[in-house]
Image (cartoon, rainbow, N blue to C red; front, side, top):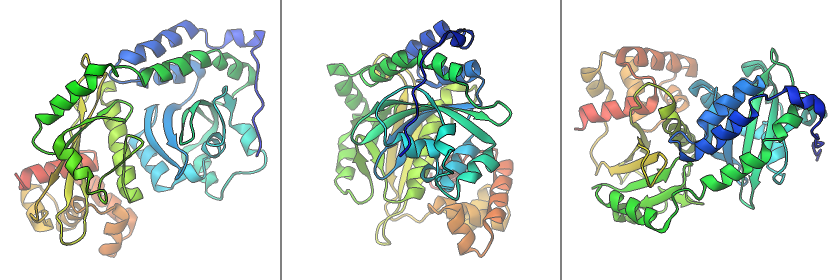
Length: 382
């Protein structure tokens, strides 16, 4: 396995990252900001002439991104990345997952021996990505924390002097990421958050803005005892299917980034299917406001429909101005099916089903599947 060569600071790095002090200040401000590290990542992208940046918490085995802060990534990009299982073909992740905490490196040396998989060309052709400056911030037996800053072909690859300048930030990045895990972990915080969760009538889970579970109520604990449907692994939600895991990951990423935009965040709903004798579970994800015991976070509630039938296509088109085909699409989404599953069920191409979804978004005013599902359930099952 190739190891990247460390780049040492030199005088030529002085002209790069002239706002180094501002970046460091923004890092420490992240500890008390509801948006976590989103602001820092946005400033870093601008400072290094990149196009996007991510601070990701990655599970080693089975490999998966469990939480992410990002700047410059669209929801379409996240969907593309997950749908194409790009984590299996991502040269940086494949190499970084084997490394200990270190310094920034360019991704280009990792490709000298050829891409790690046949699908890697899609990263270049579909997204026009050329290079990434990457840093393993932390590493444990089960996870790594990975910071990456991408550049396109038009922006060019990272030069040694640029990597050297970025490496001056490493001690500060490592310290703030470590401190972030300890913020608000004073003895009274967990008890206070649990008391808040106890006031909620349905099973409730409170997650911090790093996606880590910090409090539950007794109804949530009872639900967790069933194990086969909702699991907690390393203090994070874990699902049996990649489709549900990916949907939850995207909803969490959007909730964590919600405070970075002026748009009001609408709750998102995921459907957890169980065997035929049991009704589905309805999981709703809502961002929490910043307060003195939690620097932002997410409230997850789960409702058992108790054998109540999910809305049919015919019921849905009565409430929303949709065609019959669009109603069938919504029926499938509410039932917890993926777009691929819906396409196969109705003998349509996935491209056709995606075009139906765009039409539904235009007609209803929603732009996320989870928001659409929430609206349908609230309208019909209230």
